[in-house]
Image (cartoon, rainbow, N blue to C red):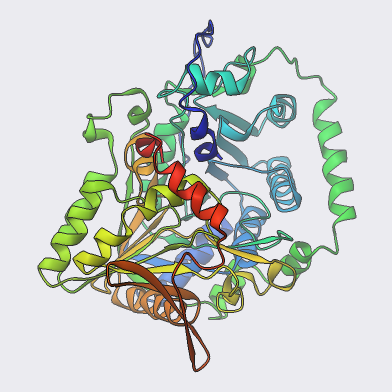
Length: 515
């Protein structure tokens, strides 16, 4: 993860650097919604039964990791026209390869696949990408690519402030009829199958005119000046045998993993069946997609007209009663502290759930957050930190995946709820990197039913699965409920003196703008 690279910032290097080739990538755009698609017809029939207007969004939460995987692959399997995917990280593990195999099979059926991936995690994968790209219906593009003839670590240092700005967006759209946005990348870690770590995450699927807003955003990135066709970045020449070779690889892989938990889950249900059989909660409301313009990456940071955060700010400023923040990487900065303090001052209850020192998977981010805790508590902000040992409390995220073996829980969901009626779900953390460095996307949903459901979940998590922070004689204490007992900690729970020493040392580094 990029945040771990920030430790290299103090190093000063003067390496020579070449440049990327001219970007001659051709432009193409999302397909129009077609009534020839069976998926489209079935989704429209569901909307008709509910009496929805075109501008009404029909929304479904994807809380469980395996369900989030099944939703994506079942929609790919139902696709007849197009699949557009945009991700920050796309791993080549079990779930990643199963999803790619489904995309490949869809391409064989004549479905147009457009896969856009940030280059941060693609080192050494160019040939595999080029082979995927050899299929006439499968195109992969790379966002903000690294130079292929230079070490990436060197580029992260010499290109600091440019190459370190990444596309953090996560979007998924099928047949221009249904989209999924949220916090999940592609990989076992996000879909409940990692053997050591369980990620608590959240996605939202939706239909309606709002899907076209996702497609507009996708096209903006797909055709951006810093998005490259893979063939422009390497000298690999696809052969006529590539398509056959990849097909055989996927055929063998699917046969080998036909009894995996994912394959079994796919045989048992799919998203459309769950919707038609009323087995998922559906929420109806108005919705709008908010996103950073990709020009944010190549522009001065004061060009806020390209930024998502200012578009979100009016919703926050208008909070009257309650503002709930769930952000795994929470570094409010002085501006954020002032904003939250002003909300409390006008009578708004502000509650924040983030990772604790031991549940956070990025140590330096916790150091950036922890120095603001006392000030936030003094202002009246309620702070809660995930108890990484209480996987049972967040079983909805893991009960079909890693809950039986994972030993650590990490919060990864990113959402805000305002007055229990306006909910933002997306890829954006409340930290400087999301605000100023990376690009992000999310959806604002106006639905009291959705807001109430998420707040109910939040209440159960902070009650039984998190530490509540408070001040006692100027020092922070952590209180944990365990049955009828309450346990109090005077230091970050489960931490050693060495953990706390590292946290204090990292606070001294001038890197907050990159966290």
